[in-house]
Image 1: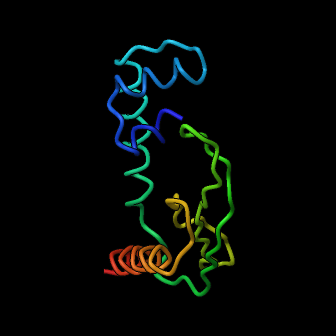
Image 2: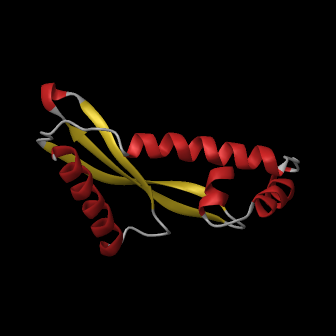
Length: 122
């Protein structure tokens, strides 16, 4: 929940207030900031990792999860899975949709995949 709220643009104070409102839990701004920094650091490393140059098969799909952000709503989590050399499967990317799976969102994902695979091949 902390990361979702940070990604959605809430300040540490806003996240702190939301955690009290939703869960009745008080967490310091420093802890919220430390959580966000660690997760974003790990995510940046994962996103910039090297892939096999040859990814003969890509699967893309979405599954829906219920996320509470004031009200409960179904959000798509878009997944790109590659079958890389030697038949091993690897999750290439995860993207949280902003309420839909429209053509523009899929184009964004496919463009991100193209950039990722082009960068790896270089």
